[in-house]
Image (cartoon, rainbow, N blue to C red):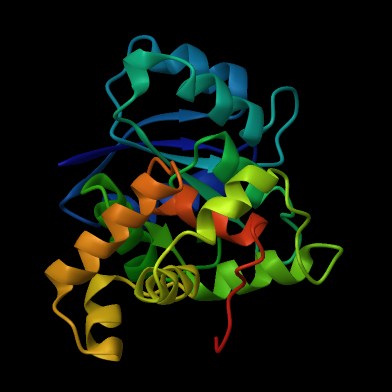
Length: 222
């Protein structure tokens, strides 16, 4: 059973998510909070596997809340998924940099929401291609500014195959989809991805996507 906490200042949205997710026998809503302070307080006495985090909340927003959670080693195993509306959340990349593990659309189908939560709980990334494309298109410049030139230089050290896999991950494909597209086994895809994350100092695939976009590797063909 995956234990989920909902963090959003809109009570009606939380109620809707609660109904949708409680219908899944593998998911249990164990806590809710309407702001960052409430979320941080709740974590001190509630065991949580996955947090669904809104970004635009009063007081401490979702980015800062994510950052504070990641600064506490006690919560190292908690997965954080950002909830986005696709058309206005320009801070999703900031949330990924702060330590979020992926993002899901508030308008996603019940199946997509549940699948994203379950995959994230298993250590996989939850990056909707539609959401990723929308987030990149929402940036003011065609390509995001490179925040760390040294990090960008690390991507230049990747092999052509590793760069190809990074591009496909940025496009939102999972291991099985990449495997079918470039005709190698899922295990080999995972090996390349893990090696790539080590080379660019990315904690996980969500952070790999964030670093790649900063380096100018944008989604294509979506």
